[in-house]
Length: 342
Image 1 (cartoon, rainbow, N blue to C red):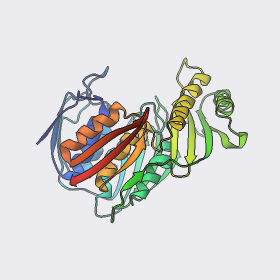
Image 2: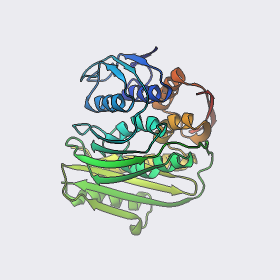
Image 3: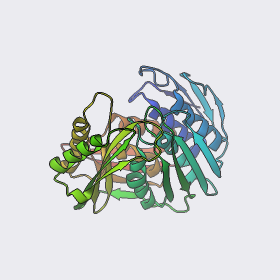
């Protein structure tokens, strides 16, 4: 039995999601205590419970503690179930986080799987659908993890109501991910999505990108959501380089000016560009478990986040693997993974 203190390191829901994914792919049961203990509302919230219940089904698991506000969970997997599934967070909770929880198990399954996710597609503190589609999945494909995606309806916090689907094929052969050079930046694009909000918000965000990133008007787009479920705004910058595409997102908030949303996102883009690394901060964290499954590899990234460092420690509880972090220069780090026994 693996015991995990959910309050250590980053201390959030990622610890639980990583443990669920790793438990299913290794077959090792775990017990986690102090789930999200440092958060304003400790324990399982709706989106965390959605990930637990999806893992319960996919992992054919024995589970106790899977209730709202629970701060302790026991999970024992009994094989991986593939097929067609429909998972609904029931709130604006992120469907993309549920996807990242169950994806590692489904690529280890025996047959293809098709999943529909309902809930949030563009939420603060979670990877938006665009990130999954344009940054995360293309790198998975380099590891011979074959996934296709489609979005049907946008869902913003706090209403949710979004819907997207994914098709996942079993892993038949593996390829290590080695990405040490970003290559020449080919194009930078900016997209502003607005739902039940004035189009002027999107125009102001795009104007900031035109001015501060010196974009061409043809490389910008405004998307006003048709048949919206609720209000929301996402400002997305896509950096397409020779060897990778990275996605950076800012979310509109009540009382925050559109220009401030744009400026914060543009600052993240400039930090990434100036560091001359291929992998951004969020992508680094989310690549770790897929890379362990496919045998390891290495990449250059920004200074590792607390999420990344915490995820490394969770992985080491389930898998015999070495992680080496090397600082090359200010804000440029190399992360190397060697899987010893999996």
